[in-house]
Length: 62
Ligand code: SF4
Image (cartoon, rainbow, N blue to C red; front, side, top):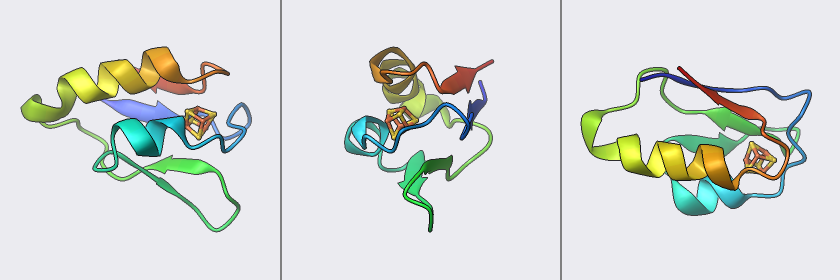
């Protein structure tokens, strides 16, 4: 599983950092960026939760 933030859609709400701080962080523009490309097995549930919680559907998982 991979995650990628579409920064054109991100509004910097912080939900994904709150849910999965090991997967997402705020960049210098106040937008989310992924900390890892490939999600470790133990963080898959958190990644899925972040995807579902993003208000703008900015996180793409594949
Ligand atoms: S939850 Fe979505 S909109 Fe909010 S900071 Fe994360 S990627 Fe951006």
